[in-house]
Image (cartoon, rainbow, N blue to C red; front, side):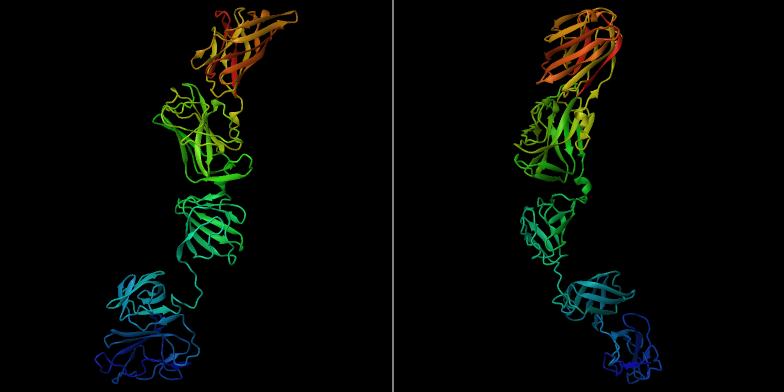
Length: 610
């Protein structure tokens, strides 16, 4: 076997008092372990030494110690009673050319256990054992590795270690340090220090600064300077309110502009030297995903409490037109956390007691900050999103009572807007928001076609009584049609239709004209008490009526109506047209007879509205 002479322990060993170390023992192990490894007595490597090797009366090994070529040893000298005197690790034979250079440097110092993360060394060892240097320790459980986190010299050098795994224990016996020092080493420096950088729209010194950066300022960033090489990366903690613009050379996670929040972490990567990606780790923990960005139906809520109505738009992204009407620029705004508008107790928004209302929920773009506004659809405002709107501050109890005024928490002038939803409700007392909304609908996609679509009411039988009413018409309705199906009476008094408000049925002030007849002749009539649907012989008791009369809103509360009614059992037809100024929103319709005594005896009526 190829062996080389041991560089240590082949001479005389002495005790601490200077006397010969007769009877002391040398234990031989594989380096960095407690595994016994044989040594040899001759240069031929054919006769193993005893293990341990017991020193003779002269304090010497009984024969020279030869080490296996290419093997690393740990040699431990103990007293005759087994107390460790010194441990030498990573030992190679003299002129062992088969040995490779190790990445660990054996200190030769004896460590003293302090705790799971600390040990001490005699003398000032802070230069070699400096913060950041890698370290290898031999403990009872075996070899562990770590990094020095603190090194301080007092009476001894106390070293604190962050271990990769495991812990220091009382059996610590050997310590080695990494070949490469933590400071001024021979490896290229990777700068992970952190410093503050002034962010700008296009010239943020992203690549000329440290790998981890805090950004000051809140610019709208549209470009980054060129990187020195593709693959370069920076971790950035921007100030809240910084806007990272998606598009051009920057691809932002979520494919939309992003407005940062406090604590957000951005990872900016140079895909090429001139194109970049921005990954976002939100401080809130919520993900930035395409699903939110492309949401078609906006997420709104509406709740009542303390007689107030609170409408909320949850986190989403919305595209707004430019605040300059002559520009086609689209601005994508992020709502990172919920925003709300409150309709205070006492504020009616122009709604009517015990009458269904429909409120439009608007998002307004106040120079990049999205806010909520609300308006009563009955007010007739232009909400086609092609113009700019101005809002009035909601103002508290009783301060927001107009149907044609758009209210927001703070008054805004000439701002772009989007409809983000509708809230439908009926309150017993207008301004006392106590009943939960009957419908809450976020805007987007096809979800709101019901706003302009035709709604059919509930049919009412006309088989008895002098009057039959249909109520529940929302004060947002712009067109209402009354339909007659097989309606007949027990007398000859003409059938009359009257409109009503929340205050009751209106029986005066109508301006109407009616014509009725058959091939043999016609009759005409005017009526100020309602829309008289027939004249002449069509009013006969035997007539079975079918037809419809449509009423359209003209202005604020004036309605214009016209329609046809024919007899299915007689060749008769009646036409009516006219108008009525109600003075308040239309909420109900009544069918009756002109004399107020003839009663209905067959058929049914219903309405539709939009």
